[in-house]
Length: 251
Image 1 (tube, rainbow, N blue to C red):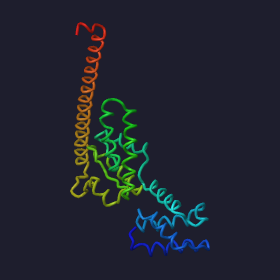
Image 2: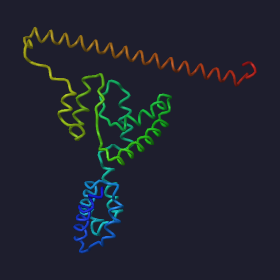
Image 3: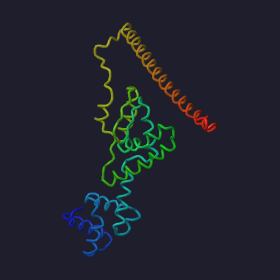
Image 4: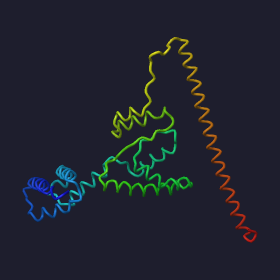
């Protein structure tokens, strides 16, 4: 808050104290204002409203600590996923075929832990991610940044619909944004619906399905070859280390 917000702040404070039949002296109001000066007037107003509605704290006039507790509670429930859920979202993004609805904080934290995960230490990667995510989210909340969701589109068009629709239902994405991300429905105008036309359409769809299956098989084969090459490389290093330990003078 700024100095120009003092009168509005004092008016709200007078109103909430009057609910309890009490008043605050000018010196106490000034001290209260200084304690809350790191927050905007709108945030403080929301915290006062939340205090009044609080079945426990609302039975007493608020102190600065009470309003700060309301602000912190609102931040925890700001729509950002917890560390474990965020880690699960990040892992889904490893499959380039999958469409993932994620946040900037998740992507940044996963970038920190990716090298550890690529090294084969999933437990260490998860710990690094959770530490980084907690720090990044805390910084965002201190900066009063709202939770923001974005879509990382996978190459498999058929898998885009469900995660995007679920995000809209959960209120994470606006419907117009989701509509722009999903493929347009196939137009029915000019479609040959005769038995011969439908037979040709089925044949083309079968060819496309076969083509996609062959591409998937080729990608899986390439990934398997890469995995086997990595295993062989690690085994070669292990053999060299064992040979050196058995006969260090020969090295």
